[in-house]
Length: 390
Image (cartoon, rainbow, N blue to C red; front, side, top):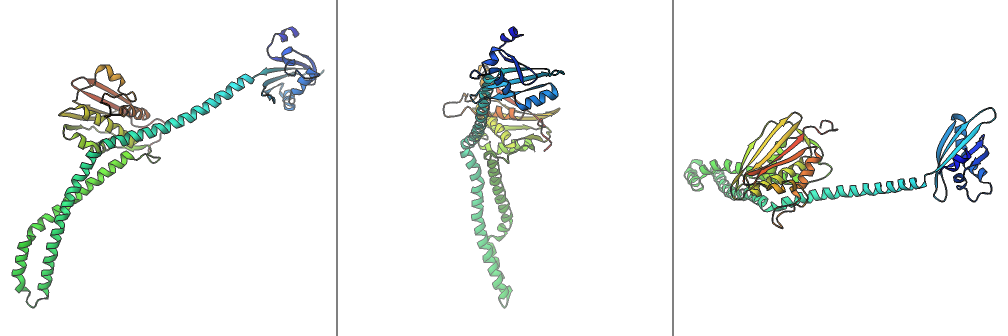
């Protein structure tokens, strides 16, 4: 046994009972090189708790840490008999393994911090791309807002003139009521009604108010849609959402960019409410619709088709543009890849869209024929895995 123990890398200590050392191999003695009595020093390394547990259960294992940084894994085995029995103690140096584990934990913590920073950067990138997209549409959105504001302003001018005429007529009626003979002023009242064209005002005023109200509601809707796109925060949470409403909202935002050259056809199927992050999916719809519009040079058509199958819904955005060359179809979702001229695109739109769809546990696929057009198909689960009904 002595010869075998000398071949071992681990330290071996054999005792009679728990206190009387009988033998220690070279590896064990090397653990206490400065001790005058190495065997007794090794016995003293055994913790009191180890002795107690070994007497009760027959074995104990644990770690011992030294001031110099060494860590020993100690295993104690006790065989008891009337004469006191024998105790075998094995010392295994785990300092390097512990150091590696500490290093792994340190690197794991660094990776977690990096992941948190990347998640924050990704969110900022998503928000920046969203705002950049809206920035590119700013002139069109301004036109969409200025249009209704323009005729509301014009209507208010007309309304001001109508009010002046009506107040003048009311004053004439008050004079007639206070006069000794009100009927004597009827010719003057009729003349004023004719000059101010009161009959026309009576017919035009309700229409003027309705148009103005419609214009203000149009502006309100555009501002609400812009807010949906520009806002990002904790309240932007998973919701059961009508995807058709999201598509229509997106079209309202970008319509000025498309309406002069695109005919839009909607083939909406019946869709259930879908668990999603509505603002982020609207970003996907906007990116793909804008790309479809840019692919159409003069006149063309964009077709929106939706449907549901089993536990999924799907949306297709198809255009009659120039299509995507076959050799780059596999790269269109890569970050910063773009076929647009320098300064005309960031190359992040489809990459961010791909990430958003993946985040929703969905798929985004493209089929395209050069010269005929492209079709992007988005497939999403109706319910997100692990999320309760919202």
